Amino acid sequence: MLVALTGTPGTGKSSVASELERRGYYVVRLDRFAEEHKLISGFDAARGTREVDIEALDREIRVPAKVGFLVGHYAHRLSVDLTIVLRCHPRVLRDRLQGRGWPEGKIKENLEAEAIDTITQEATARGPFVYEIETTKGTPEVVAGVVLEILQGKTQGREPGRIDWTDEVLSWY
Ligand SMILES: Nc1ncnc2c1ncn2[C@@H]1O[C@H](COP(=O)(O)OP(=O)(O)O)[C@@H](O)[C@H]1O
Ligand SMILES: [Mg+2]
Image (cartoon, rainbow, N blue to C red; front, side, top):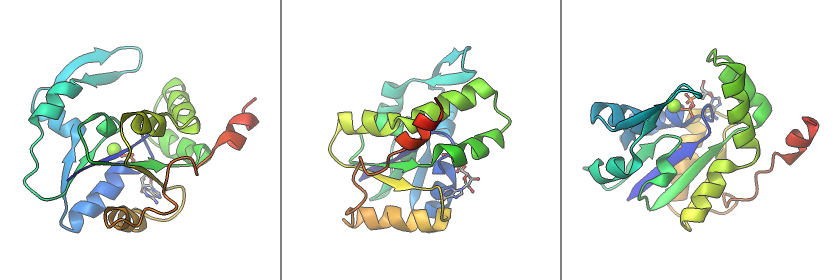
């Protein structure tokens, strides 16, 4: 079973992935995998980010385990059985992204994407098994536990549509 662990940058994917790995799960960090397998197809100069060849990535990933977590903000665009979207309140996300020293434009673009549910919408447009976990509070350890609960079928309350940052968005105008 392939599980996409996705979310806007800063929502906690890498931290939760490390915790899953610590618990013995197989994790593919997509950025690293794409780099190692030379699947970078271009460079977005305006954003200062690399573009990954998603189709080639999809073909080349091999998971030698019953469960594999594919981790990255485009993981939901791969052929996965289940997608887990990490979500973080934009105000907290701003603090996390500012801590990275990113330019304000890049921070704003990501806060807006988080605020309007971009990744969840992309994921639900692709397939039925999509769940969300909020990471605004709690710890990566707790969130990893929730990920594993979802894998066991405890999906109640994790359906997309329950997380709503529109109050925050309205406060921007
Ligand atoms: N509940 C939580 N789950 C995941 N990360 C959290 C949580 N609370 C705080 N954080 C912090 O948020 C940051 C998320 O960064 P990171 O894991 O690199 O995100 P991403 O890989 O999605 O860009 C880390 O500093 C992490 O410690
Ligand atoms: Mg990361």
